[in-house]
Amino acid sequence: MRPRATRVRTGDSLSNLVAGMMTARDKRRHSKFRRDDIIDREELAAMYRHNWLARKIVDAPAEDMTREWVRLETANESAKQTLEKAEKRYGLISRIGDNLKWGRLYGGSALYVSIAGDDASQPLRVERIRKGSLLGFVVLDRWQLSPDTPLMQIDLTRPDYWRPKRYRVANTSQSIDSSRLIFADGALLPWDELRRNQFWHDSVLQPVYDELRNDETVAGSTASMMFEAIVNVLQVEGLREMLSTEDGTKRVQKRFELVAMMKSFIGMTLLDKNDTYEQKTISFSGIDAIGAMFAQRVSGAADIPATRLFGQAPKGLNSTGDSDIRNYYDGLKARQEQELRPQVETIYDVMAMSEFGRTLDDLVIEFNPLWQLSDTEQAAVEKTRAETDKIYAVDIGLPIERHIMSRLQTNDTYPTITDEDISLAEELNEPLEEEPDANDVGNAGAGSRNPPSTAVEGAPDAA
Image (cartoon, rainbow, N blue to C red; front, side, top):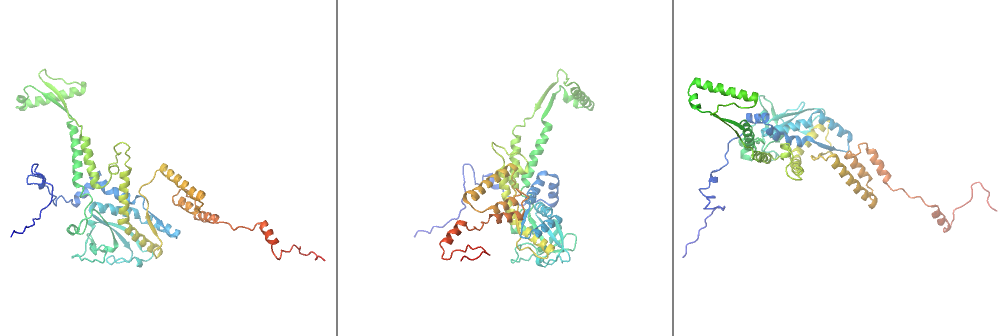
């Protein structure tokens, strides 16, 4: 009986015994990612204050996400204007922008909804907010908040079950329920890392840290090389013997101070016949390519295109950088919908309760496009739309005047168009009722059994 074959489980990988690839001789096998170089609070603050590139990585996406802001749509025009005024009064755009920035810098931040007369340690009930009770919004970064629960309790009925139920403001006894905080997170962490990090995420500078240091090293080293770009070399006979004594050293020092002074005065160097002078120059060819490579790595790690991060023109023939910026804006648009929309809808409900004592059921919030067309591009788009409208209205005969005027009003193409003008256009577009023709009336009378009387009122009857 033949012995039963046993199966051996192996890990599949490409190997090359001659080259040593994926064998014990492969030096790459000793390269591992380890848990080190976690940026602490002080270094994060120093990077944000002193390194322009780190500051821009933190600020640029937050500023771009809030730059064009939102458009409110509701049937109640007066309520819409009231909310827009409240938005400016509370400085909402600035507060949300700051919340995003500190969340990106420190790995977490929160916007506190301050309601007069409410117990901050109790859950927020939006439907119970009293009219005129909203005091404003306060930004608190992760170092101003700490979990107020000694033991983390997981409640899967909460959408943000992984957050602590309450937080305590640093250096105070104030406790805040998490429902009153609108959070902005940095670079997201998995559960185990999140728990080690006191239930806060990482700074967005953490995964870019090595690339930032490398880029700074290249820039600093290049700047230091400028001091060595041109080196003057003097070969002096008997220099070693002269430097062996203190008096000789002073005489050498004085001698070449005079040489340097005379060179600056008359533009030439005077030396002894036996002395030799030469000038060595360092070549900087290729350094620009090295710097561009590290800058590109920083841009990729930060997920911000180089045209936005460094403010540099795109390279290559027919290259405008529009595709990079559009992809970047598409990513921010997705983050607006995923992260900002729930927060913004809650904020406007809170402001509506404080302004009107009720929420607006038909309120629609739309983020304005991040990509803004130039005047020339906008004119081309309007021309194309006008030609399309002409085809629909004239050639096909569709009654679309109201839709055209509504779009022109929304796009501010003609800001003077009012809602009354749009309603009037709709009325004028309605077909008129046809009046009966005189010939039709006569024909109808001739063929009738009882023709209409032609007698004149007040005339005598015929005999």
